[in-house]
Each structure stands twice: as structure tokens, then as C-alpha cells.
Image 1 (tube, rainbow, N blue to C red):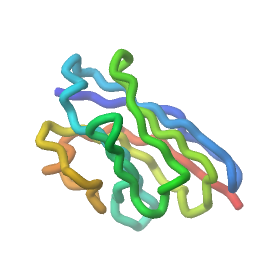
Image 2: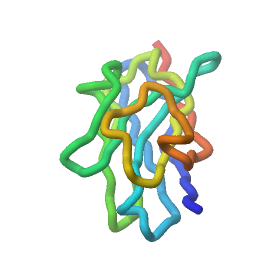
Image 3: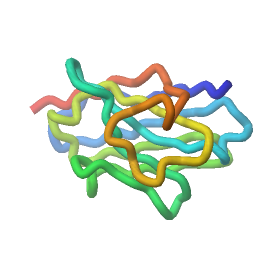
Length: 128
């Protein structure tokens, strides 16, 4: 069973940057669908970014132009590079993976049917 471990969360001021990492346990990592979701208190767990191939990432409108998702296959690690952070980006960020077929677009809300594996989350706080 796939296990995911996120790291890189923290506290920054508005306009700051953070790099999140997600290390996967499965040697068949290459074949999994990968994505980042986030959840703020009292809100649903929403899609942030997903990637099927390196040439075809998908982003939520709220983060387009500011966040970049990419993966290092050799290290079995998924990354989320976040710049221009805003207070509304404050949330717990989750790495998610699932078996193909992968969703062709980023789901608005996380569903286990799309991404059956979820990490423990890493907290991101952006202060104004």
C-alpha cells in the first residue's frame, strides 16, 4: 500500500515562498496519479494541483501562476513550489496518489475514488 510523507510546511508572510515535498513508498511510483489538496478549517479538502505527465500539470484557478507541481521519479518525490503566498493559502496541504486511470482534470474536491491514498498533511500558514 502506498504511503506518502509530506514535509516543507511552515509560516511565512504574504508574498513569501515555500516548497512542499511528498515522498512515496511504492517502487511503482511512476504509474500512480499524483496531486496536492489543501484544507482550511471549516472548509472542504480542495484540489490545488495535479500531474499525470511532466508536460501536463493542472492547477486550481486560485493558484495558477503562483504554484508549480513537479516530480522527481528517481527520488519518488512529488513537489509543490509555492510563491506569492497569500493569507487565503493558509491550510493543511495533503499529498494524494491513486491508481490509473488518472482524472484528466484536477478535481475540485478530494474524493477517495480519484486518489485513494492521502498523506498526513503539512501545515502552511501565511500571515498578512
